[in-house]
Length: 376
Image (cartoon, rainbow, N blue to C red; front, side, top):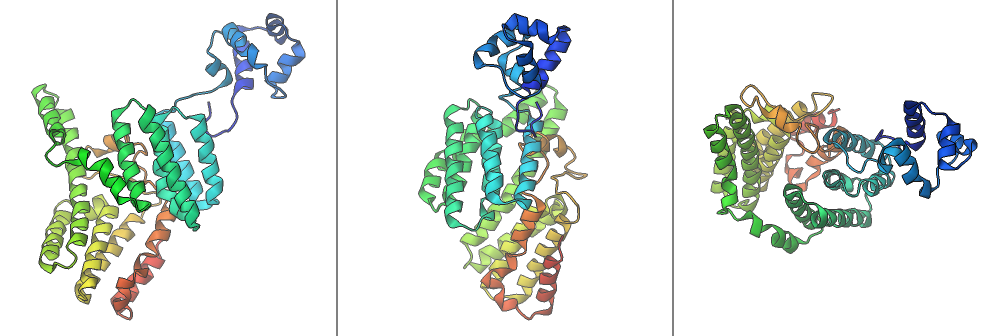
């Protein structure tokens, strides 16, 4: 089935199956007890067989009813990735509600394909802010909660269910329901839980079995993930200690060393840009213009690197040379979760934060603002 069309392929399938069996329209009509004209209309999409005829028609061709009508209840990983990218591109170009309606149609069609439904939830969460109507914001967020609830209730894949819980917590934060997020995540996020040792144990098991390539790939992914997690946690740590200059500056200095050692500005410019932006906000809060400009410049440099290619892809480097295979296993593959045009709209508003007002008129700051406007 072609996932980019909205019609089932029953007409084409009847023609194909009939030709494979080398029978005429008259022979098929005789078996089913209908006229040759009826079969002809089925094959030219002028009408469809009565629903009671479908089991008999499928049995004649020795296929399932789903195969007969061209319905695939499950999508492949590659199909899910392609659909996500198609929808993300449409959100960047078409009216929000038009794209939402199309995605809802696909949700109904693949209501039991839980990996796809989860990616639709991610898609909605990454694009709900495109519509200005706050009621639409809330409506979309509630739709995510509803769909992820369906996933949690019916999906048998523990990983997808756990990811759905985390996704619901993110949505509840957007809805200002912090307690719901705490209730959902506090128990499963205990720092002393033995589940946090599973990666280390799995790596050791691979090594004992002599599966060194698997151990190598897994540990690279774990290191990469933990480094990005450290950078994200550090940005939040600065926000928590925004009034503690000593703690915040130590955090910034240490993470800057991590960024340098692991070449994160090149490896993952998006996460690095977010950290530099938080560092700039800290120094702006304490009216240290010089250091605020240093980190603002690093922020813009990461953005320029991010937008230096036509497409934004996750990638490894000479040190992390085993990541690509893992990226392809992700729900959205190595593609960015949002279309570049959508990301760019958010970036161009980043200096609208009132904290940056004290830099107005600074030559370097005005140059940085110009660079952001010129990003394409």
